[in-house]
Length: 448
Image: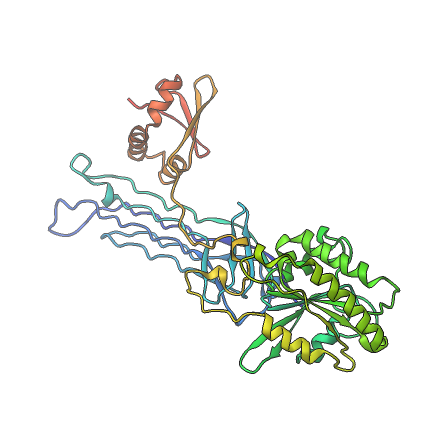
């Protein structure tokens, strides 16, 4: 079974606490502060690994936690950094975070940090100065980032076989490659995508048998979204159209249904080059097959726009008469696939999203970055003599210090002055001694 979905919880390591320590050594009567800093917490990193094929490993484990940083120690010993946790995912994995950020891991070796470790706290040595020669406080380490990630595997295939159920896609894949999909004389025999490799003289193409689509698949009917997701990365589609459907349906209506669902799901799929393979030709007479193929060729020729309207000439969709039972037309189909699917040029590692993707502009840029701490804050009055200050930089400041420690509290108040928080509070009507809530902590603030 192909596992193409997973949901995991990632948690980066917390930073280590800074140490409050004073030098105590024989014959050194005036030993000063020597507390070391805490180490950084480890981050959670996803790596695209081509030795993996699906997301099955995430069915057994859903929680991933990186190592935390060690605390600082006396004699200015810095705490060790936490070990990063590296999680391997198969090529073609799309990662969506809770905030909507999407990472598309296509090229093997691509790395993306999905949870950054917390920074370590400073030891009291860092707070020593000419006016504070013996600080009796140190910073705490901050917690690492955490959250749920949705993983979605979208197969990396050059050619996608699409069509209604029981159109003959699995038989075609089995005859043209060494794949062994389930083949039977009833619909929905294929319940998950199957890959096969088509060998050329000097190259190979990966073909994907996409399970049969039904009307409404783009809106989620059946397993429509699950199946259509695997068509997104293909560079060419082979629309397999049954010449003699067993259910008595019209081939023209079946063709229109599939094309409508592809375009509805993603307009880019409507622009992909395709080949129409009229399958099961052994069930009709050669004259009838040629007549139907001629009708489709005339239709596609009429749909081709004038060449002067395009930068490059556009050729009509090829129409081939095929039979997986007799092998009719499969050599021609193989040659056409090798001709029409372009050879990929080498891509630099700083452009990971472009390999194997025909329409690069339709994908979001892939960037790995460390977000900066936002310096803005907001002040609101909760009640008479009660205030709340919100802002990432303010929350981090309070989280780092023990407000029960008078020296630490004085240091926090000094930082609030420099950040302009006290000035903003006073502009709203704040008076010394009022209660202030920052980061869920309420304390009495007396800047004087």
